[in-house]
Length: 406
Ligand SMILES: [Zn+2]
Image 1 (cartoon, protein in one colour):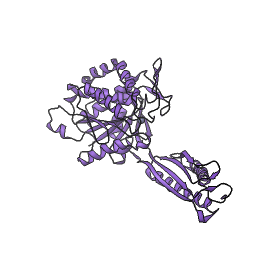
Image 2: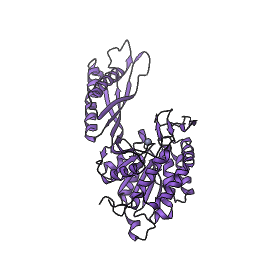
Image 3: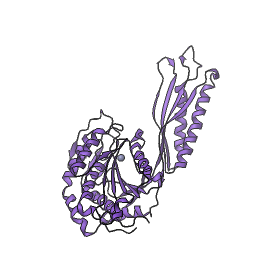
Image 4: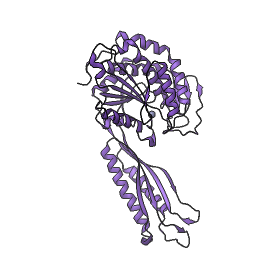
C-alpha cells in the first residue's frame, strides 16, 4: 500500500483541534446515549445523528433498512478519484436495551455510567467527528476515493446485522463494493479486530398433547425433554474446543401447575471462530434434540413429542491475516498515537464484509469502558483523545492513499 502518511504535518492542526474539543465530543456522546435506540427502533437516535452530521455541512440520506448515510466525495484534481470504489466506515446505532431501560447518566470524575455509553455511544460520537474532519477542504482535496459513513441499524442480538447486510447488498448491486471497511465499535485505542466470530442462534421447541398430570401421567412431557436437552447442551459445552462456545440462554415451558405441558422452548447461542465449526455444533445440537424427544416419547409412542428448531440469527465468520495491509495500516495508526496494537476477534458489523471477502476491521473510538450490555455499563474519558486520534489517522490514511491493497 502506498500511503500519504497520516502523521504528515498537514493533518496535525486537525488532530490538535479535536484533542482540544474532547469535552464537546463527550457531550455529543451523552446526548446520543440518552436517546434510546433498541434494536429495531433506532429512528430517534438516527435523526439526532443526522442532525449532527448536517450541522457539520454533510448531506445525509437513509436507505430502506433505516441506515443513516453520508458520503464524503474527493475534491482532488484527479478526476478519477470520485469514481473509485469507496472506503466505508460503519458504526451501529442500536443498543441491546429495550425501550423501558432508564438511560440515566452518573458521573464519577472522568468515569460516566449509562447503559450504551460505550457500545455504541462512543463509536457514534466518533462518527460525528469523522464527518467533520473529512469534510474539511484540506482533507477533501487529498482524498483519492470517496469515504462512506454508515450508521447501521440491527447490529445487536436479533438484529442479525440487518443494516450492514443491507448496505453491502446495495453496494454489490451498484457494482461498487468498497475496497475496505472500518467498523467503529465501543471504546478502546489498541485493539484491532480482524477476525469475525461466527454465531448462530436458534430456538428449540418441543410440543406434545399435554394432559392431566395424574390421569395422563405417561404422556410425553415437553418440559422433561427440554430439561434433558439442556443437560446435553451443557455436556456439549464442556466438550467444545476453546474456540467454540455453545450455551442455552433462555427457556420457557408449561401452561398449568398441575398439567403435563404441551410446549417448551429453549434458545441456544453458538459461536466459533470458523463457520465450519458453527455448522458442526448446529449438527450436534440437532442430533441431541432428536435424542431428547425420542427418549421422552418412549413413555408413550402414540403421543410422541414433536421437536423443531427455528433459526433466529446467523452471523458468518471471516477473517483477514494480521499481515493484511488494512491490519498493518491500523497497527501503524495505533503506534503513531503511542499505543501497542493488539489483535482480537469479535462479532460486529465487520462480519458482513469479511464473509464476502472485503477487507474489514473493527476498532474502538477512544477511552476505556466496561460492563457493556448491562445496566452498569461505564465509559472512562481519560485519554479518550488518543483513540479518536487513531480513528482519524486511519480513515484519512485509507481515504488519501494513492494505491490501496494493490
Ligand atoms: Zn457494539
